[in-house]
Amino acid sequence: MALQALSSTELFNFINMYDSAPTPFSCNNDSSETSPQDQNIGTCSSMPRLSHPPPQAETSVQGRKKRRRRPKVCKNKEEAETQRMTHIAVERNRRKQMNEHLAVLRSLMPESYVQRGDQASIVGGAIEFVKELEHILQSLEAKKFALLEGSNKDHNNINNNQNSDENKQFLGSPFAQFFAYPQFSCSHQNQLGNKYTSQSKAAIADIEVTLIETHANIRILSRRRVRQLSKIVASFHSVFLTILHLNVTTLDSLVLYSISAKVEEGCQLNSADDIAGAVHHMLRIIEEEAAMLGCQS
Image 1: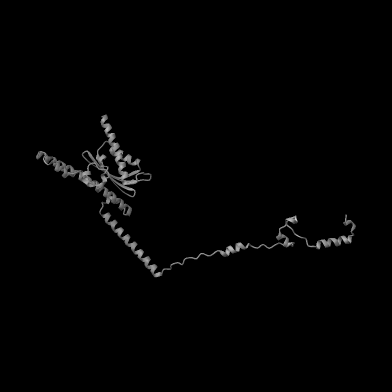
Image 2: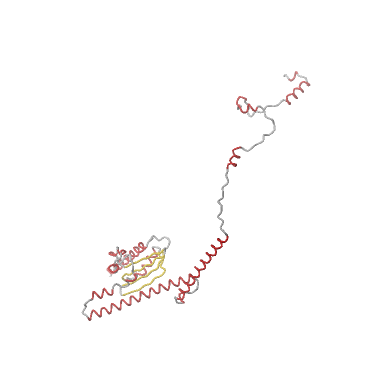
């Protein structure tokens, strides 16, 4: 209503005066809620504000310290070359000795045991040859014992069974030399007298086990039973023992087993005593089954 009373000239001057006046800028509609900092600013122009990075980021970047690298020990070129040549000479000498030993080992074996000339074939053939020699030795020992026992009987018949106890002690137990420290012993305990025969009172066989890493060497001297060998092999398989080599030597009612076995993964037998105990348990079961069959027959 007030604008209608003004003339056109006065109205134009009023509009120009209103546009030329600075317009205050406020972020809030209510002036009472303005912070003291905003009151000090008063007005702001329409030009955009320049954004500056926060000072904390600059101080954090400047505050980082570079890690000091440890000084590398620079060896003299002559020392490094001398060390390298020494290592090469030692390795060459080691290979030379290995090849010489393998050549000697191959020359000691029959050609049938070595099909190829590589290291693995030579060592594998040597293992087979040693096992064969062991079997021959055990067989000769059995024949020797049988001959001595036969001559002893003839001598006792001539002398009217005099000094028979002395002759028995002279003969000793068969295959005694193959049992140095048995975990179980039923025939050698009086002769060996070692501390490893504490379980020999209830033993039904001579059992000696040596364990190196995952390979076990087992010797068993027991009485011969029906299907004894097949049951032993099946029992070994059930406890994760793989038989690699097997020698069997018989003497009258006795049998000597020389077994080389590998301890497979999953086997719960962690020591030589554990394996010996498991083998003794197998033989005890076989003896009980044989006794039951004898009673039934």
